Image (cartoon, rainbow, N blue to C red; front, side, top):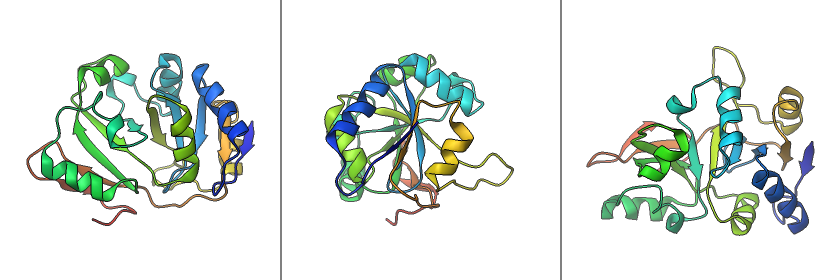
Length: 202
């Protein structure tokens, strides 16, 4: 199904409907401040495995990220963060960035392997903020991109629905998304390093 949401002022009834889908092993497509992304509850192994199947990867080797409500939400899933890294994140989030951090055992349990790193996102998007207020845990996410040799991002939620209506439980339509992904910053070493320049500018 397609659930149309006004991004500037999301309807709480629709947010609660989406929350219910996620809490019942649902896999959905949501907008972010960059591109549309698949999303599943971190507590639903069934939905996360469905996501891995769509992305054609084994869950143990998947590089999925976490969408978190705020920086206070990440302590369960990442090891202690250097003060300078924390300051960088605080100044950049919410925003179009993915920070790669050292993962805790909580992440390893989700992926069923000794996963040492995890990407963290806190998107600057009203829908995400409203949804995050209603759920008490992060979402596992992975971008929606065209299935060809060149990675192009699908920005039209109606086309996304046509492509994935048999694979996901809902596509959240907040209008056209952007076609530039987040900037990825590796913070697992002493100095942060940009490994993909995207929408976010440091």
